[in-house]
Length: 112
Length: 113
Image (cartoon, rainbow over all chains, first blue to last red; front, side, top):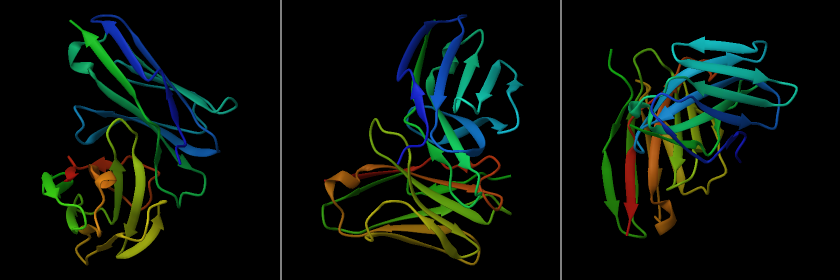
């Protein structure tokens, strides 16, 4: 079953604009991770935020986590055509003995 | 350092046949995870192996099985293939449990005709 649900399903923006993707989940978590997938190939880890953290930055990426609302957002600033990809959130549950559970992803298109 | 490698890249089988997919984790990683990604869908968890043992299993029928070898590489077997098994199969590895980042291979595209 899907734990995370990304919103929107698809997003199209102009190069240089910011892109915001949201993720909602259902159960308590140990951490939440964001991954990127280019053209249906392997996933690349972008950033991990732990349940006791509220915000994290990595380059042009900014992730927030609101455990009270069971939601997270990924912000990509100053987007580039090369950012075109699918973005997935994945949650790791408290037990630590369960695998990462992924959402269905947001398809981001950045138009040059 | 070599990443997670999967073979083959593409695999075409006919309905009813068996498919075998292989995965080599990053050196030092003992956990291997298999996911299925059908077209337009998210990743569905299949199997998790650690130290040669099956640790967890997703909601898939028993014809999906696998194993982990002493060198931590892994094999996913799908018996009695059905058209709906056509998907990208992704393998990932991590240190111990998935409380840190997972490293994914490029996947095996299985097509059942």
